[in-house]
Every structure is written in C-alpha cells, then in structure tokens.
Image 1: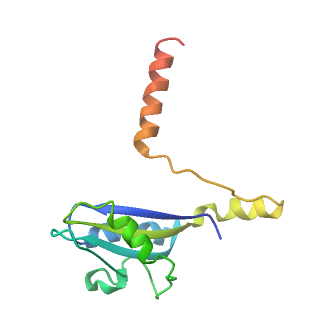
Image 2 (image 1 turned 45 degrees about the vertical axis):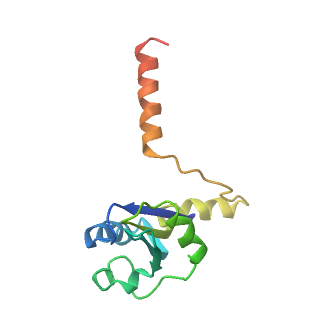
Length: 142
C-alpha cells in the first residue's frame, strides 16, 4: 500500500455537489488515488453539525467509490474535528486516500529495508510564495 492521507475538503454550501464529487472521482478513475473512506460533515445555518456517509446521498451514489470498497476508518471524532473548521451553512468532505501513484516507490523502499517515515503537506500558496521570493532573489542578483 502507498502512503495514505486524510483530506478535509470544504465547500461554501450545505451539500456536496455532483460536480465536486465528480472531480474527486476523476482522480480515482485515473488511478492516481484510491478512496479508502469518506464522510460528509455539514455545519447547518443554525450551527448544528451532522455527518453522514457519502453513500447516504442519493445524488452522489457511486460518484467517488465503486462497489462499496470503502473501509469504515473515519469516525465521529474526525467528524467533530472537521465540524469545528466549518462556518454555518457549509459542508466538508473528509476523504481518506491512498496515493496509488507512490506505491512503486514505497515497495522499492520496503525491499531495501526503508519506509516512508513522515510526510508534510505544503499548501500551494506557500509554494507560490517561495517561488516568488526565489525569483525576486535571483532578479536582485543574489
């Protein structure tokens, strides 16, 4: 198995749209990721938070996962933590994914006694800021 990661994807409305789920589904069908588990967390306009399985939403049935292959690994504690990130009237899709593209690298590391010990997700805006700073540094002749 390749490295796994729990993502919290937030949206500015109270439901996951088919378009949003389809975008994630395309990554799965491209073979880049495998969805291990998912959960929808909603912070309603009145502030109440609820959560449900993706399969509980008829309009999203089968969009992300085929054949009920998900494992029940995301739980109520994860839902509560995600709910704390949400503003009233918004929704989050918690997705536990395996980075399938990294499987070959992980296998090669294991074959020689190594392992992926850690990973850090760097937000795109941090990378963009670092690139701008490096370009400015280079332009200044440093």
